[in-house]
Length: 578
Image (cartoon, rainbow, N blue to C red):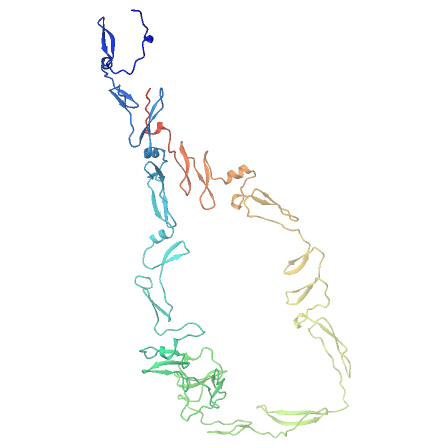
């Protein structure tokens, strides 16, 4: 048989296991079915495969479960076990509180507050337990103690207060709120104000069904004020309910505006009616008015007398311990009509002087007056004619004035000249120039200081004003501005030099870099400047190695870094199969 190559054989179909195949066993060629070859030798090794392999009875296939997945990188690559769903979302979440938001997702959450009254610290829980605290008004309320009604103070805090009443107007029970506050009108109240008070008003049908004695109201039907007394309604006033005219009694009572707004007063010089007696105000000496006026009458209950106030003070009327009345009035020199024991008239006694006009151009009256001031004699003395004045002189005295023209022996003119002295109302001066100054001397007289040379200044020498040459302008100048010093120039401009210090609003430096460093709060390499909420800057020191700058919504702070690669995750693994 010629040799046939395998490629020259006809093509076969799928192997069923019954096909015969030559096999050499122990040096002898035998035939065996293909199924025997497939079953021998038996597999004892275990295999890890991506999927189930029926030809490998000992193989094991990888599969995922909840949260675990497989990723096949292909032949000659890797098979990677990964987290998926909620587990994968958890690995990707940042530090802090985590909430499951779906079947396969989780999300970072932070505890936050809404509105005012609460604050939260470490709301994400990343640095410690979240802490909720009261703030603002609730915190103020929680800090209160004692009792009282709550009230808001300036919108920032809560305090306690007590409802108080006004003396003689309002009474308040339980004003501190321990019980229900009860506000009522005080007994026997005094109504405040000056305009008026409005009483209840209504028609007759609106009267109380069972009124109490003392009830007052205004009746709009009969247009009257009415009150309830002794079981019946009564209108204030008489007649139709209102006074139409007020009339006084002559010599007793005077009425003004009697038909509109009557003003009633005691008549001037009144005649007191009656036949019994008139009772004066009665009181002790201590009860006398603080500022008495002349003409006051009263009965002093301490002294048991009627007393009057005159220019001599309080005097007792009458005599004797009982304050008896006058029994007799005698008349002295120059008076007639006395003695009077009941009624009578006292008059001035006539003298022997004849009524008439005394004195004229040709007569000089000669009048004699007694000790009582009466003229007891009046006669005319004729003026002698033809006489001459022998000599009349005049002097200026101590007034500082001089006289001329005297002495005069018959007629002439007297002239005053000179300067009137200060002691007589003058100034001791008679000429003035622009700029002259008057001053009082040590003898309390006026003296004149004449105007001086241009540029001179007014000074005192031994207590007397005088002009002196000016010694210059400013002699010294100082400033409270930190770091600045003034020049010592006495004339012209004063110049400030130096560098303005921090305490006066400057920086104490002369360059931008040095000025910034003087105001900066940072002290160490890596420090940051952050605002503190009060319009000023504070220092934030550098954080630990690996920390990152974070915000909690209120301020900035250094925190440990979150996340990282698979090598830093304790529960993440990768399987590599080649």
